Image 1 (cartoon, rainbow, N blue to C red):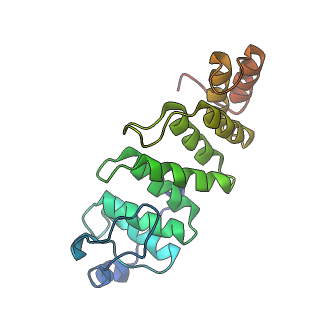
Image 2: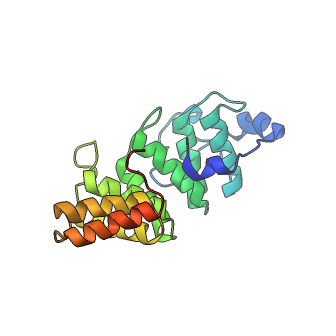
Image 3: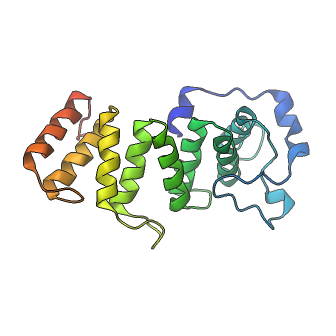
Length: 201
C-alpha cells in the first residue's frame, strides 16, 4: 500500500509487540500531529528513533500484533519522518491524503510530499504536483496552483518519473500554468514513453 516502504518489509520483533502496551504515551509532536488533549489511549506509543517509530507504524498499518489503526500508524510515520525517515514521510503523506481509516489532511500530505521532493525523490514531487494541479478535496485546504504544479512536474520528470512527464505534457497542451506549446507537449510525451510510461495503464 505504501510506495517505498513495501520494498523493505519490516519484521517486527516479538518483544517489541509485547512492549507496546507499556509504551503508550503522547508522541513528541510530529508533522500534523493532534495529540494535545487526546485521551491517553488515543495517543501514539512513544518511540525515540526513526526505525522504532517505523516498526510501530508498520505494526498498526498491517495489524501485526495489534489491531489495525491507520490513524495511529500515520502519527507514528509522521514521528519517524521527523526523525529522518524519508520512506515514512511518504507513508504518512499517503495516509493523510487518502484519509481512509485516519484523519484526512491534504495540507499535511502536501508538506510531507514537498519535504521528500526537496530531498530529490521524483515520485514525491509528482504527488505534490498532482495536489497543486487538482486542488484539495476539502475546500480551501490546498488551492489549485497550475504554475506550481508545472514546476514540480518538471522536477519529477527530470528525475525520471514518466507519469510526471506525461502530466507536464498535458499542462503544455492546455496552457495551464505554462504558456501553451504543442512542441513542448510532444517532447514531454515522448520523454514519458522513453521512461516507460504507458497512458493505457
